Amino acid sequence: MGSIVKVNTFKSVYEYNGSDFQDEIIKLLTGPHQIIKLNDPYQVSKHLRHQYEKNGEEPTPVSYFHHVPIIKLDLSARRFGEFGGRYAPELQMEALSTLENHFKNTICDPNFWHDFLKCGLFEPSPLQLAEGLTKHAGGANIWLKREDLNQYGSHKIRNIVGQILLALRMGKTEIVMDCGYAGHGLLCAALCEKLDIKCTIFMGKLDFESQKLEVWTMKQFGAKVTPSDTGLGCQTIRAALDDAQRYAVSRFEDAYYIPSGPIGPHPLPLVHRIFQSFMGEEVKDQCIELMSKCPDAIVAPVGMGSGAVGMFSPFVNNPSVQLVGVQPAGVAPLTTGSVGVLYGACTYLLQDEYGQVLNCSSYAADLNCPTVGPELSHWKHLSRVEYVEARNDDAVDNMVLFHDLEKFLPSFSTGYAVDKTIQLAKELGPGKNVVLLVSGDFKLSDKLDV
Image 1: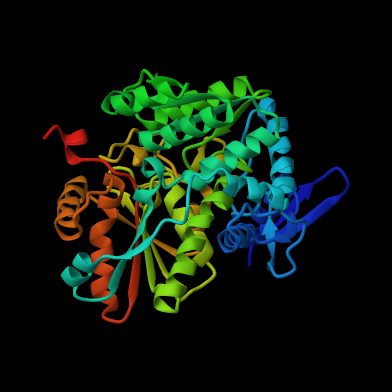
Image 2 (image 1 turned 30 degrees about the vertical axis):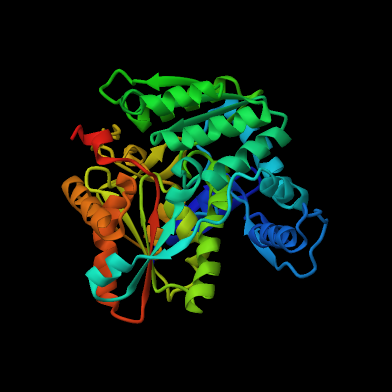
């Protein structure tokens, strides 16, 4: 039995059992849950796409789809339990509140999803049976979600498109983004040129120098690309995140910031998650079509969590689907980190005993971040997602194996997740199905000078 704690508020004094004290403090700071009802955005988008394919002409947006299911969505800062929140400077608070209101109105508008499809930048990426890997594992079927086939190999394409269109609705004139893998920056720069909006990209100095051709191409699209260096030995995505956030906050009236992952103060992780979840929704539809059921397991590499949030979120409430996130051993806040606040949110991060953020390193530019999105931390506390680690050398070996068996080479991010996928296939056995997220399109020589 916990002790009784008295909390003074402006109106009265409340008494709480000690075990409930933390939750009540969170309620006082963040307010109540904000539940809205809306037509399922993915189903609206899917309906519009089918209408176009059936009629052979541009779909006409409608204000209401009587056959599209209604879903409930929690837009509050308390959505991820004790994680997340809005730990932001006063200067940023008004901008975040404005974003939250615009986002709520936008996702309820079918006309927005019409514009989302009208961009014509992407189709659902294929779900492909990995015959070589399946035979090698000798167990469950292994399926590949081929995000590497998206434009510029970006698995964040849905999020980037959605957020740029949201920024235009808000009257913003500049898009600010950080990236490790240059494909995400290329996609952002290309769309900004198409829509005639200013684009500013930040990359860690190491990533900037190792992807010079991609940086040059971004500049040809009209983007300003800036290498970032903290001056403390960090020249990766972490440095880019620091610089991009500072730049965006100082220009909050005109600039719209798209983080590399589902991180940052509320509502940034939620906005990222809604757009990215289309990827997992596609997987669900494709599995029903190809297997007549949901997969038995899904595996995704984990950096900040963009791919994992996109793949896992549609399956979180289905306990029959095993969810596994794989982190590089040198960048594993969910297995070796502790809870703290970084980039405006409470989550797991790599920090020392004094709260100083630690440097980290992996072969995958996108995974070199010492923190993760708050929703991934929430899933850890719920024991809903299993998080494991993979070593750099193992990632290289498994990429070579992957190439030998499947005849194409994905990014290093995927390399970290290959071994766990094979293990799961063996454990589950024949007749079961495992889906692996495949992203990017790098060559080994790009990173290892071989």
